[in-house]
Image 1 (cartoon, helix red, strand yellow):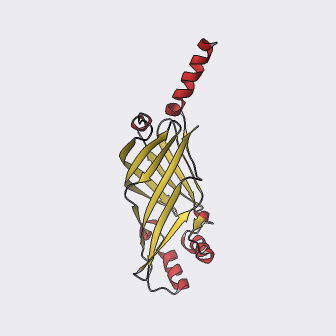
Image 2 (cartoon, rainbow, N blue to C red; image 1 turned 90 degrees about the horizontal axis):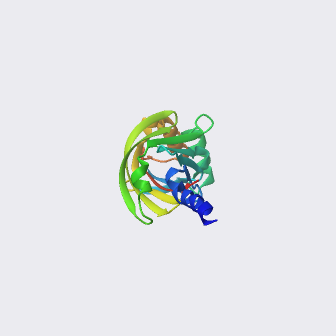
Image 3 (cartoon, rainbow, N blue to C red; image 1 turned 180 degrees about the vertical axis):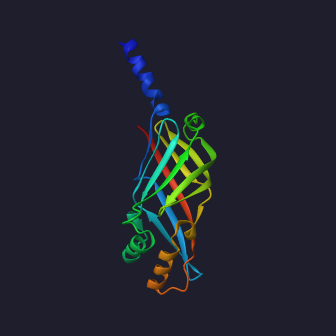
Length: 191
């Protein structure tokens, strides 16, 4: 009986290294800070994220733009319609290629700093970044990836300046900063 059980047990222990990693959207967070009138900062986040890292290290993250949340429903609606144009561009995506070996080799609780090239596609425009990330092995089936430095996104790079101007006029503001820092805490689970 033990001889039959042993191979199954070994396979179960090896599973995370060879499994797909799926984003735990409930535990993950993607947020950004906006500035207006030169002296006011406000926090926003996206509530619905999907993502995975496949066995070959291809990582993808999809952000449902409809899920923007600033705590002010009217502002969220204006951002959906005027800024992000969710009817035309319902999702933003992030793509990257990871070397999974160093992450899979981490002991539980151990961390690894990564400089990772990634591509963000937002509002129909794509741009590359070098993200500084911290990967932490939480346990045998979960790891966390956190931005050590926020990614700085510029509205002009994604064709968002007209929508930003529309928001500024609607809200009666003197200015809205066209650059925003974006931070992420992403939890992945092996399946």
